[in-house]
Length: 316
Image 1 (cartoon, rainbow, N blue to C red):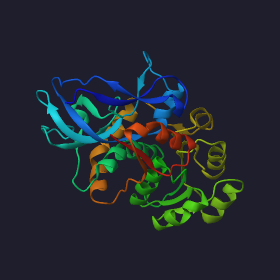
Image 2: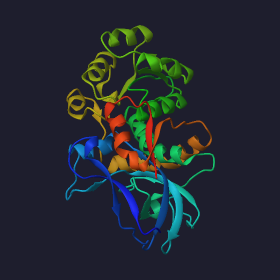
Image 3: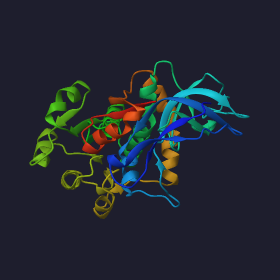
Image 4: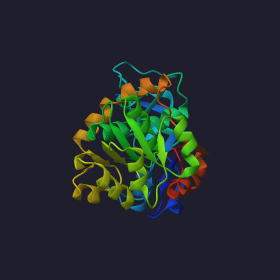
């Protein structure tokens, strides 16, 4: 362990301007815990919502440490450090995980069973950015009951979660139509996605591309347009799923995914298969930007703009 650990924290409520890098004490590992030197840690819109105070937990106080996804190298272990796969972890092992409290830091002391062994084929940045977005994507596809032969409309397909939804839907044998800015269309086509520009006339453009209709819609954008177009095109409202526009989608008969036992069950169960897919190259983690830890505020400013086009990663 190091004597000084640097961590990203909100020191007041607000936007990116509220974010600082602060010094926090290191903590030795207890039973079933390990210490990791963090090599990469991802940021997400959920982190920004916590800074804004729109997502809170009982007992939340300032300064509020941020992040829950990280990858790094084990530097110290407590007793019986059994990893997620059920095997012991040791000093020197390269690991990654999510749901790691305060993950945006130079060092973490965490339960070993939250960590997976990092495949050699997966870089630290990709490992740090994999599970949060990919497990969410699996959950949306399970909720929408997406199977081979379905036509899936993905709102915000060029984002971190939207991109994972598209890739995993294609692997299931579905056809994917995704909304994105025209500047991203060529890249999306190369990945097997049929892109359409969002904005006025979106429903007509999607309908023209899919005369047989849309089976399901996954909303990662949270806009009124996404909901209106989904309602217009998807015959079964329960196959409209959002991670961003909860009340409106629920009122329309769709599904809104948030915390809870079912969320935990589905997303935890998906970890090993997602790791296998990423290690084999069948699932890509698109890193839209990498920033030194001390530039966390800059990274959050890019995130807040809403057009990053992939995962943003901090490098301690």
